[in-house]
Image (cartoon, rainbow, N blue to C red):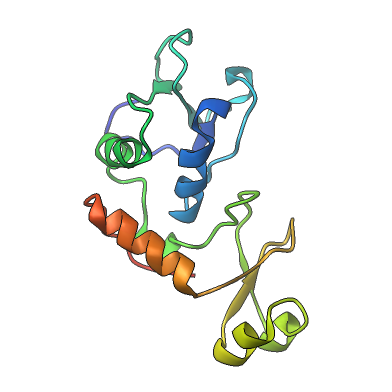
Length: 154
């Protein structure tokens, strides 16, 4: 798969779970897999393992540091991130988040959060509630600090 290609999924092996969570935050379909045998034709396996031969479907990430991994990813797959999809996936389980009425979040978030926020999303699989708070803002600052500018926060 060439550097201009846009895979629809990035399969994440156990050596890159932290990177995988960040790719999910960036709105990418990034399922965790136990081995390269689980990848499908519509994606690539990202790994740090050197015993897996790099090919069109297996890509070795050249660093252990998250900052370098993210910078490398943006250069290697320049069209993968769509700014309007940032914050659209559950970081825990990779599902697409769904907007919910504010009242549906009332008993599921701290009172202060409910009182100070008007927009909430939920993961249909694990039921985690998301809102635009300081965590996504800090993630944006972190990304900007390593030269990655993206829009859209939950």
